[in-house]
Length: 492
Ligand code: GLU
Image 1 (tube, rainbow, N blue to C red):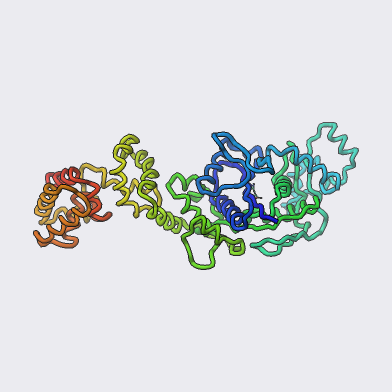
Image 2: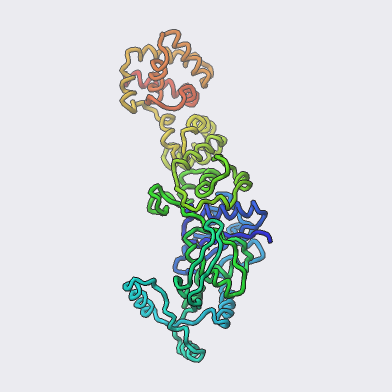
């Protein structure tokens, strides 16, 4: 049987990185097994509907390169369906659920429940106060067909519940968790159809996974507690249940579940800050899964080849932003300067360093600047912390060490010598910088930090920073001369 897996997000407005990981593991498993990866939209909870959420989710997945074989995609601004098992949006499948619930009502695996919200609330409060598990007490189970018909005719609102057998062990196997057994005494008669006629998640997920031929359900461990209900639903329908795989939570440094309150958790946050998609995918693959060796950098193709569900860990993986930054910095260094510059331009414009027009006019110059600072970046938004030295017109000592250096006795001699070299030079590049500094060393006898630091401070205002020769190249003749002149006339 060929593998069919699915990622089934509820469009709630942003994509948690845990969801990206669930999608990725489904995708990788499908690739590895030559199967199909399906994306289904679970939007039956109308109260949680967020405008534009589906589009945002599809965009994030496309950005990450986690592309589905079947499901909804956006083509020319319009949603289109790929595949033959659709519709892939649950709110378009309501007739199917209505049809399927009839089977369960007829076989006695489901029943109408007319209890009011007030009664259910009071019941639960009482159970909680008595230290019991809150659950429905089955009052409506015994209603006769005539009573049900009469209540319906009178317009009474109702839900349809799952009719669980009493004291039965429900067992299933999970690739990460092993064998799981739960007794129905610890379960509730789950609502399957709500009073608005919409299915609950539990009912829709089973019907759809079955009708869409899903062989493996790979999802977050928060759903583990619901799985016995799903397994019983399969039994009630007489359908084979899929293989389950519950992924460990992604935790924060305190080993608590990673939530929005602790900063960036949405894929969109990482996109905005300028993480590269291959870096986020590479890093997130390793939170909860590990390869057989110690490899840390993986292309998508390598992940597709090496991923296995058997190596998914049972315990939660800690999301370590420093590690993510390390992976991202690796990919930034490996990327072409143009790519990094194109990603950096919106940040430079937003911070007021340049305008959009200047960005195009001075593209080559900006590219040489990016080449110098690229290796300092953990993510692209940090570019604005590093480019200041290339845009300033007036030099000011930016730290105490720089201020001290400006007081040095040899400062004037050194700067005059450097001015001379600059004026004579035809080309100002890194090689010029190297040669000029060597000559000045010979002429003045100053060397090492006594030579480089004063020059660095005079042209950047900083005592530390990127390679001095590269800075010289990016600044060019006019900038160098005017900066040194400024320092000589204002700061010495
Ligand atoms: N719609 C559920 C969610 O938002 C899907 C859970 C599942 O994969 O069964 O996570």
